[in-house]
Length: 65
Image (cartoon, rainbow, N blue to C red; front, side, top):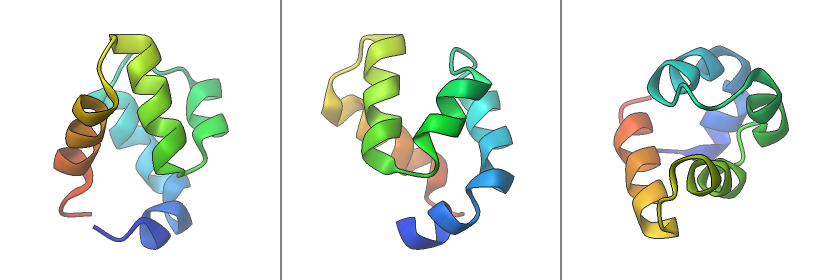
């Protein structure tokens, strides 16, 4: 997974992130703007996960993107 590519395609990938993590709002996704740390932070906030749990979910979701 290359986060430079994900950041560049964030507008296209926001939909899949919203499907996967429905508690994220459009505003959340706009603020995240493809930044992995921001995404992990929002997932921790919304789902009560640890940073490691959030990063595992992110890695699993974006592995083949």
